[in-house]
Each structure stands twice: as C-alpha cells, then as structure tokens.
Image (cartoon, rainbow, N blue to C red; front, top):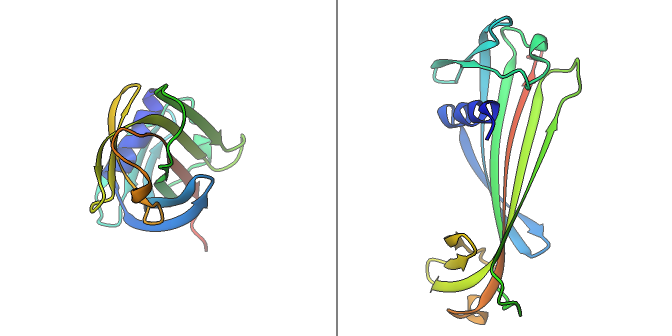
Length: 188
C-alpha cells in the first residue's frame, strides 16, 4: 500500500463522520451499503513541504504530509472543504455453486482529478470470494466461509433465503469498498 494511501486512510479514521445505510440492487441480490462521510476544513497549507492542516466539526486539527502522487495540491487554499466518504457493501449469493475450487479475486480501481482541477481521488476495491460454508447462524444472519486465504464471516442481506443453504455448501460472496476524497471551495 502506498504511503499516500496510508495518509488518506488515516485521515478517514481520524475524522470519522456520520454513518448512513442504504440498499441497492446488485447482480447477486440486494447489496447493503454502509457509508461514512465527514467534511473537514483546510486551515493551513504549506505547498513546499506539502503539509495540509485539516479541522473537523469538533474543532480538532491534524496536519498531514501529502505525497507527490497526489496532484493538484497547488489548487488547495485555506478555507477549502475536504469531503471524505468511505462506503462498503456486501452482496451475497448463497445458492450452492458446482465448483469445489476456493477462490478470492480482488480488483482495485483508482480515479483522480485532471491536472488543474481541485483534488479528487476515488479508490474502489471489489473482492469476490468462493468458499465452503463452515458456520451458519440464521438468527444473526451470519455466514462463515472457508476460502482460499482462510475464513471470513460475513453478514447476509435480509432478502437472501438462508433455508436454501447448509453448512458444507460452496457459495459465492462479493464485497465492495470505496474511499473518496474531494476538495472544493466553499460556496460564497
């Protein structure tokens, strides 16, 4: 993981904001999405040392060093607003699959602003897991999968019929997470 991504993640962890949940339709059933969002204010910036000081709604400040791969830092000014959004979703297909091969496939995508614009970055990671059900808690709606890289306990959406699967079945699950950081000028 790059140093700049670690800085982005630490910013998100330090300034955790409100949490919202939503359901969206996914190819494998309903996807339950949980999102956290916070807005921060740029209180100081040192363009030469690439240091940005951010203040959260509680008035707490923290200074971060921004890596050179984060472009358009020269567009950021004190008073700008930084919006950090972190979302994750889980869609589960609990219908037995015919394979006996356990698998884990990860895909990561990164999008960022064009040169000369206010900074923006969006990182999306999707993980597809096929594994054997080693534990099934129908009341708590939790399924533990034994996959290629160990076990993983996942929550199951309400619309999935857990009576159609049993301990020992092979199933597929999809997990998606996203981190987005956007800088914009306050409206005047």
